[in-house]
Amino acid sequence: MSVNSRTVGSERLAWAARRNKSLTVLGIACQSGIPVKFYRTAALVNQLSEAKKTGTLGTFLKKLYKAKILILDEWGYVPYDRTGSQLLFDLLSEIHEQKSIILNTNLEFSRWVNVLYDEQLTAALVGRLMHHCHLLLFPGENNRLRESSVNELYRSIAPENMQEAR
Image 1 (cartoon, rainbow, N blue to C red):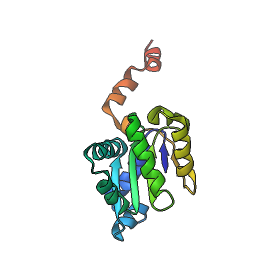
Image 2 (tube, one colour; image 1 turned 90 degrees about the vertical axis):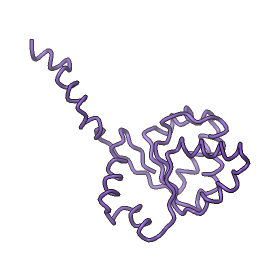
Image 3 (cartoon, one colour; image 1 turned 180 degrees about the vertical axis):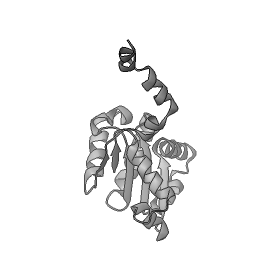
Image 4 (cartoon, one colour; image 1 turned 60 degrees about the vertical axis):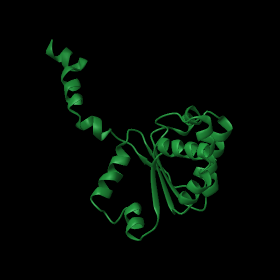
């Protein structure tokens, strides 16, 4: 699980993947033919909910279960509906200790209840995900903001620059 305070870690991992660095776990898995599924978490939740509505949830889950590694990106960027949260919980509970889960988020665990809406479900899910987990923290400045032209403009008009000009 990677917890990124400002997306700097996921950018580093994406850069490594683009550069085909064989030292990354993902690179090794893909090059070895290990089945990997990647989802933006909100998209997966939507697909789970839609599959339940259309009666195809079992078929969709079978496809997910084939993956040895499930990557969930942008965890908690948008709140999930109650049904979607429950389906996501069910999926992760089912595969926990059987599959590898890579989860990318910038939310502290204490704020997950704001996304999942249920304290008991949230506590149970955090417990499952933390059991036998490797937690990777990527502190640092957000690369996108640091490299943004808007950021340059902001720095040029920031209050400390205005005080220096006086």
